[in-house]
Every structure is written in C-alpha cells, then in structure tokens.
Image (cartoon, rainbow, N blue to C red; front, side):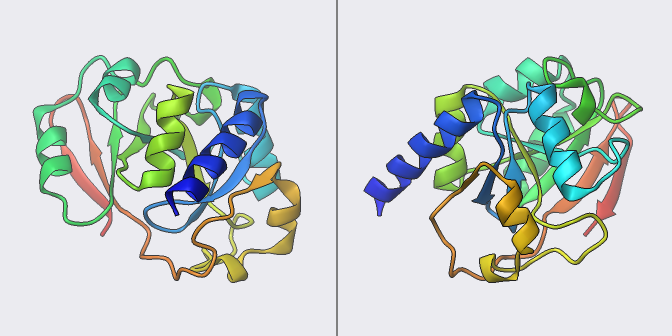
Amino acid sequence: MNQDINIEVHNAYEVIKEGGIILYPTDTVWGIGCDATNPDAVAKIYKLKQRAETQSMIVLMNGEKMIYNVFKNVPEVAWQIMDLSEKPTTLILDEARNVAHNIIAADKSLGIRLVKEPFCFKLMERMKKPLVSTSANISGQPTPISFKDINPEIIKGVDYVVKLNQDKIAGKPSTIIKLTNDSQVKVIRK
C-alpha cells in the first residue's frame, strides 16, 4: 500500500508542478486540487466546476510552518480548535498571503484545513506548498460521496486521477468555522 501511495504522490506532484489539476481522495470527500500558489491552475478548477471565482475554495496544509507562511496572525483559538477537533475542520482565517489571489475571498480570508491523511500529507511535503481542495462536482450539483459518483465530465477534465481509495465511501464534508483576527468565531457548517 505504501508503495502505491509513493507512486501516486510522485505522479500527482509531476502534474501539479506543471500547473495541472488532480482528482484525489482527501480526509473527507474526493477533491479537485492544484498548487494553491498557481493562479492559472486555480482558474482551471473554477472553469471545470463552472463556478464563479467569487466563491472561494479551501486549501489543505500539512503543518504549522505552512500555516504561518500564509497567515501572519493565527488566533490562539485556531490552534485550540485544530487540536481538539475530532473530525476534519476547516478554519476560515483573515489576511491570507503567499497564495494565488483567486482563491482568497473578497474579505481577504481563506479557508484552510490541516490534514494528516497520508496521501495529501505526503503530496504537500513534496510540493512544499498548500494544496487547493474543492469538492469533485460541477457547481450546484451534489457532492459525490464516492469515486463512482463523480461526474464523468470532472474525471475527463482533470489532468490526473489519483488511484487510491476509489472504493471508499467518503466521510461528511468538514465542519467550517470562521475566525476573525478580532477573535470572533462563527460556525458556518457543522
């Protein structure tokens, strides 16, 4: 199995570093991803999903260093939530930087999730950059809970499909919590 992960990380990395987009399993549902610092790759995902660029996407990260590279200020409560969360949790934080302009929301916030899922984690270790993650569906259609539920248009539209966990039924999408620099906390999706 680990051999497979390493091969898939290598293949996905080769596509991503050339500005390609991938279809991959995350710690929640199947996602479409790319290098979060590459605006052209991000634009390809919006186009594939037929989604307005005003609807921001989330970014996966694999550790503190990556988080601090994107946010100067990380509220203390953010670390507490990440430490205490039993299930995947996306935090929306203020004043993102060092990522593609077209994934940052109009209010300068960005949703991030720290992942330990081995494929995503290793891929980001290799990329040394955050990974865009958005559900593998055309905007407005239901989020697929397994690989076989993904619209063929999406599968055709990506540059690489990761060959891992294709028979797994996905967990629920992550909880989403918005934290502002002035310490306001708002749960957006439970």
